[in-house]
Length: 357
Image 1 (tube, one colour):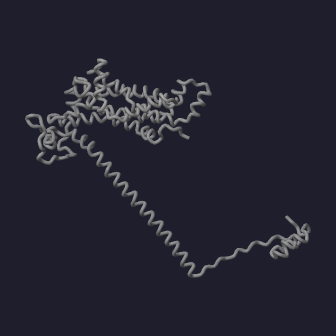
Image 2: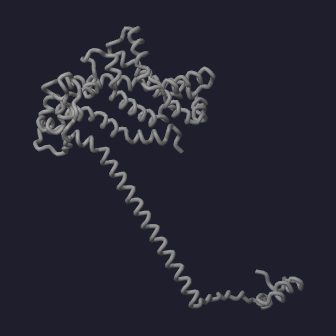
Image 3: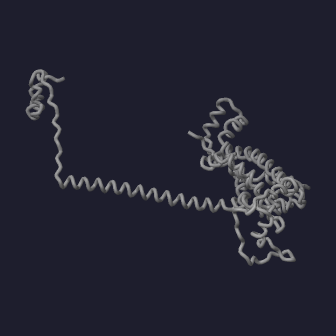
């Protein structure tokens, strides 16, 4: 503490004479006085004004809160309405699969009725969409699974077509996309541009070239005519290239400095970082080829080789009840795949192959 004996006359003049509140420094052993807090007084008008502002603030806050709740409620109702609307066909298919054949024909038979020449007839009566059957029966499932094994055989045809396409298309696209993302060059850019052009074309445009190439290779009316175009599809290459390009080059170079070769970088660094993207692309490929109809009809003339999707596209008036049960069986595997990979699908779409921090 600075004492009054250490102060020069000029300093004393500054801090004592010009500031009377510092006179306590002239007294030996004196302590500075405690500051006196000035009490702020309000008039009645000021108090009323402050209360009015406070009440207005509370009202505005409550109004905003009510508006937010109303917005959330309206959004929830709209989303719930569309969710129910989208789920109605699935619910209708599942419930009608337990309906008797006579009841299904009476409700929907007019839609599938044909003339003597095979043409469609005008639906003169209202179709009855019935969700709850009068009598629950499992006869359709018994026919589809045990009495008529042809439908179950077509189901396994779909599995035989789709699983190799998903596995080998991911294998081919992983190697190709790593090359596109890792290396640069004019030739690579031209090839990737051609991939994009082919991917943007509808599959119906390439059906005739695929038919001609399959006929030339001698694989027409065989499963290879479905497998080969699917395995070398450009969709997965394009998507995985976008995922791998988001991997920082520093990560790959760090692996190389640690002594990893190119194959180790690909398998131990690039592929784990693209796990979400690979799973999400696998789900999209599975759904796409699980629902294929044009390829088997054009490339396979033998009904013995057709998948179950082709049967569902050729429903006639005598198979309406059976079609509901087969449609439910047909939905089981895609639903399981989606439920198992839902987390990876969302992660792959939002994360897009970047490196998490």
